[in-house]
Amino acid sequence: MAKRPIFVPILDGKRYVLERYVDFVWHSGFAKSQKQKSIRDLHEVALREYGVKNPLEVSSKSESPLGVSLSSFNLKFTTAKGRRLTVEAAFQGSKVFSDGGPYIDIFGKSPKDAKRDERLTSSGPLLKFKFFNVDWDLEPKTAFYDWLYINALLKNPDVASAVTDHDGFTDIEFNPERSINCQARSVALFCALYHNDRLGFALESKANFLSLYAGRVPDPHNPSQIRYLI
Image 1 (cartoon, rainbow, N blue to C red):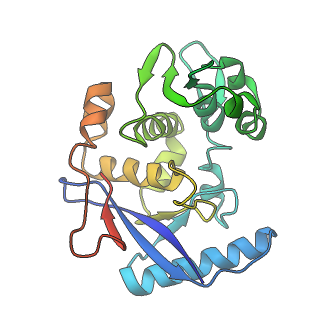
Image 2 (image 1 turned 135 degrees about the vertical axis):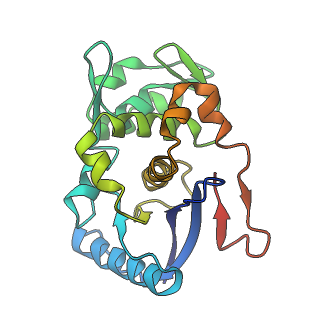
């Protein structure tokens, strides 16, 4: 058995993303087929226990071409200066450490090489993010990644339109005990902002985007199983 979160967009206009943990059968092994068996079991439990009727796996292991295209390794965007980047390379290349960074040459690397750049582990503690001369603090923890991902998604209108039909998002590779940022969470936030007609407000300024995180609190009745993230 394993436990992974599913991120559900909230449509009441007050809070935006609900995280619910799902206990499901884990199919061990590195083969993609094994990962997909685990995804199917995760989604079946999410439907049965939480009523998530149309979930989407957001990763390269997804059985849906849409889910694969939403992986941070595959989702690309073009900057104002015409540079083409993946979300993963943009995120890794924006990191600023006590002994160096941002290493903007990482922008030009493949997502796998960007994530594995040795400077990311040899430059001291992470201090902040800096993307095109705009600084982002480490708190709220997922704010910069969410902002970067949502902006990239909006630059892929066909993908952005298709994703809004789904009511829950998972990433089988995401383990909250080892990682902070999650592409499935970012997609859920995008959908919540879209359905609540808050995308324009959120992306109008950095201050507006950060204001989304002001009220995120655990559910007091069951904090280990259900959390309002934003």
